[in-house]
Image 1 (cartoon, rainbow, N blue to C red):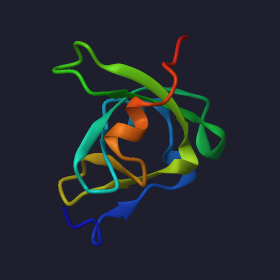
Image 2 (cartoon, helix red, strand yellow):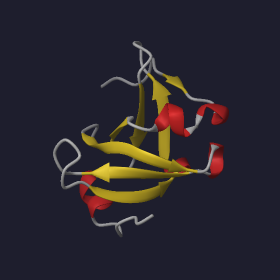
Image 3 (cartoon, rainbow, N blue to C red):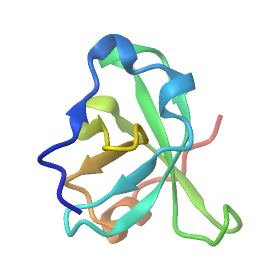
Length: 98
């Protein structure tokens, strides 16, 4: 996916209502998961990503700082994120528990 024309979200747009459900693409531009929920708002937020699984079943939730993700809006207005993490690196992280 070419992200060069996608518009980066401002820090005030990094809210749970905007980010939850967003697809997360990894270092190799493959889908690595989706945003399950958000702790906090703006640049101090922690993002919980569901990694692996199928249709949310069997997915492992991991928490990463919002700074590790680049959230943007595509041509259709859909929000997604890009990260340097790979799916394997995210799967190796400790499971997030609320």
